[in-house]
Image 1: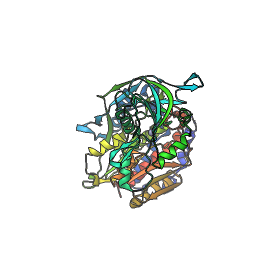
Image 2: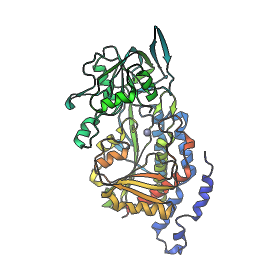
Image 3: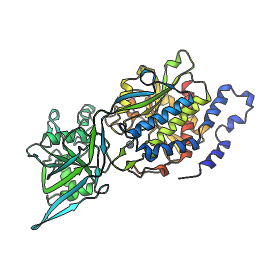
Image 4: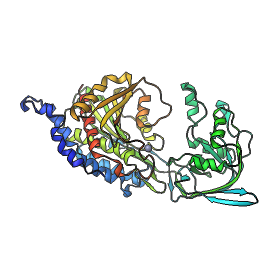
Length: 497
Ligand SMILES: [Zn+2]
């Protein structure tokens, strides 16, 4: 943990507002003074303390549907109430609730393969979190059978594509990978293929083809809840997949290429594989986005909204705790700090500011989807949405957005360069419909809502991503505090433009 943020606090004395301070205080408008006050309310100490709470073991990695996530909801609501932020969730509450099935991963399970070497059979026990990864996508239980590689594992009749064609998978275990073979750019085609991108439809297709279990080639931990009862699932590293294909005459990459060329055919490996998962499914759980509002002061403009969003959920326990410090305690506490500054400074905001901490991002952007479905005002009334996902280190700021919304960029630029004294750049691209959603913001931008992803520049990458090592020492509260200041100042300017 970097202890330099105290020095950072002292540095504030000579930062962005020095230009303004140099003028006669009387000459400053009341609003400018309040902006300075808002800037000062943000503190790295708050950010550090809230982050330590949210990443702590008690919060169990904050997976939506789990008690650890519910604790995070209470934590944020307590602060919203303390700061006078009004509820904007369901029926006068802060919560925007929806059904969220949950699958509890209680142990790492096992994965072994039986390799015939001459007349002997050698059993290899694979190592959890190195060779294979337990996932909430699995039902609890065990499965044993011959392993068959089926490429992308897709059966899409409407696309005339079936990786299971001509092979008897009854009682077998399937090995497949994420994605789809279509590499074109046609949006309509992409939308059709996109349904088969992730593991869930592949697991269902494998079961329909008679399989009892499935190994999915990916090293990322997957917290999505089981949807196919009776299917035992684990994720495996590419190295493990490579070994499981030994003796088939081709390497993993070679087989994969055939599927990419639409020439793939199921590959029986001849190896018996046995896997087990210690999972329990709970279909009746719920989760909630946390939604607060700071009402605008202008009788007309208050019906226009600036939305500050960040997902506060993470992967939970698989079965180790995934604290998700960067992903996305960082964005959550930055957003909270900006909200606190706007609320407590009582700075004049003509437009209203809505603060949302999203649930179920890690389960497929489901929280943002529910929020937009139940949006308590028309989409056309959203001035802009500012999303913060993984902003934990760095030296400057940037926004990702579309050319169409370039008119709002100067507000971010001045907040960053003139107030936080941090270099700033904008990455603007032509608007396009995104078929693969990587952030909550992506969904807003698909609805043509002006969306800005606030990021840092000069940060370290690759960061520990979706692993238990995404802990508190990945966070630099000094840059995070400046991110919150930049956000607060940009919001004030946009709210009063
Ligand atoms: Zn994530």
